Image 1 (tube, one colour):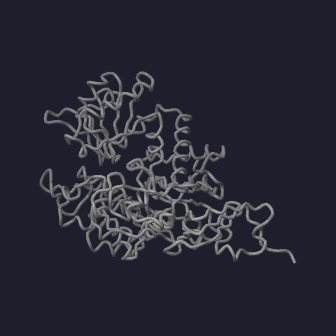
Image 2 (image 1 turned 90 degrees about the vertical axis):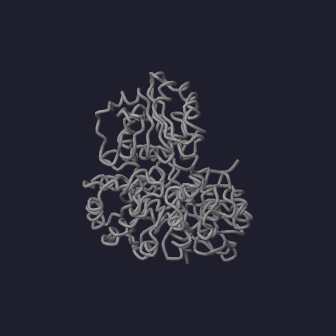
Image 3 (image 1 turned 120 degrees about the vertical axis):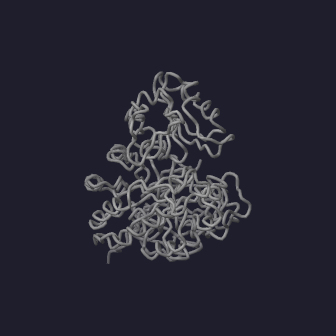
Length: 550
């Protein structure tokens, strides 16, 4: 009788395999055939016929085999751009230092072309304070400069850039945005929120398609080097035609067999939902899928544009509670028909009032189950920095995914206390409380806002300490620490839920896609403070080795 078991192409064995289904790794073997996992279990119980004459077997010793990291929230266009020779990325020590750091970019880019950089954070400078166009004008009077803030919500422009973009003192910003002016009514060069989003496509339009493809190729390799096998490429814009979800570039890379990450696309949710329909028609392969929508409900706390119920502790004016980017009624009018059609929605909501209203909307409009794969689609809230206490349990009960970025916790030391005060601080990034309430956590980086390295993000989630400074000692709000297994699940299975692909990604199980990372030393053998010693040894996407540590 013919053996029904097909020989595996590759069998990986280790004394430490973390499938995601348990809290600790176990000695196991993982067998792959084509782009799928076909068997997982103790090596001594390997079924007859699974190891054939052409099967490759790799014994990885004590290294950890686990599902590939899946970044649940990333802006790929900007991430690739700012890590490429086309732009620069830095925080700077102060305004003058940030201007000085443009010099290498000015030297390598063609004369008259845009100088584009990202990363400045005025609240981290010494001295702190919002910059103006004057310092850029002094260095680059005849060349347009656009400096995107580290939180990706504010542009700092010089006079040449304002002129090229046609912005004058009489110009009106789009709804949800602003052009800052000084006391005399003159433009300062600071452009915020929707107004900044509207300008970015015009600024980056000068880059050629091949330049952008090169940037994407390099960024894919950077992801693979860090064990990332999947990404959610989410819209960065809340306006028509400006989402920067570049399916055209992915299509070119896929056609050339150069796509080495699995991509889930989330374009902007508009009244016209045709873009997602078109993307689903075009993206039918296992590497690129169109999975839902994205929208914005507010801004960021550091700039007082996040929508909070009570005024900011350091209010800049009476009733300073931030604001929604769109009225709650408008947001509900966008979400309701999408949910009824079976399309999940991801909403950027940072302030406690934005989160509260978002839960209200999602409770009233759960995603209709399309019945396609047996996995009910779920809405997701992005960032969730500061909760009204009762909303933690409400979010979990409604089945809403909490898509969070651990490294955001320590981006602005002292910022939560400064902006929100001691009464609200205990409900900031409450990972332990969310898990205890039964919520699904999905981890990501919001790249380019923070670097893509998953191990640094896991370290921060487990220790509540900054991955660079390792401060504060003992961790910030240490009661909200989570375990290593919980953090790894959030970065794999949880992200797969946010991507609407839990049926095929996120755990090591037969039938799922063979997206795998190998770490050494095994992080489960390390003390929490030493987790960053773990290094990616190999990365597999669909059973194909796309990275191996030299």
